[in-house]
Length: 313
Image (cartoon, rainbow, N blue to C red; front, side):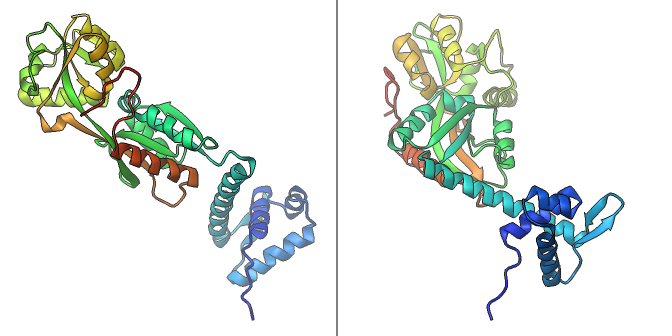
């Protein structure tokens, strides 16, 4: 004899409706079904569980302890099925999925937009939304499921999330061509520090890293000028207002167009690794997995390059 399956989606939906309405008649009306059919389905799952799931209380029908457990699981199952239906509906309408990506400012200043653009050319029916956030907000949103992907510096705490290596960059001393250090092939942070007086995104991860390393050296990190973006910092440096520590890959275009020298830092921490993170609970959509793989492959190759932007060797 075949095993009965009383926990089908219709029955679970009816059970949730009864718990929410606290009344079988109202739940039946809400789900467009006769009340006797609702009672019959509830009785069937109670018989299979071997325990009562509902009791009559002062405010109407309420779930028992077993009922509360079933209610929690039923909502989770129905939510998963709703997400599955939505994703498959996207395929039916030709959209073929949507992905929300949150990225740190440093990542957006480099190749991510170009990599996503190349992906969309190959998969024009996938919708990708891209938003800039600070790293803690990215991790929080991905953990909570309000964002599909995060792309950020790997210094963040991403415990419980699945990570995939993305691109990397190197911090440099950015200086005007006439600066005494502009002709150097490379330089240690300790030697560059006394010359640095332009800070980028104060309070951000890169700023905190530089503050930490300066403290280890016992030297202050002077901030005579503070700006919020890499582009603004590059323009200030090119104008001769002072050197800054900047990611080489983010300001290569400025070095070519604005007479800006980029001297790589020799310190091990100056090499920054970016990662892609997403939830590890199996809820990742097909479109999200497709984008993750595309970004992974793109990172393994040469940089995409913007107009007028030299490629890394």
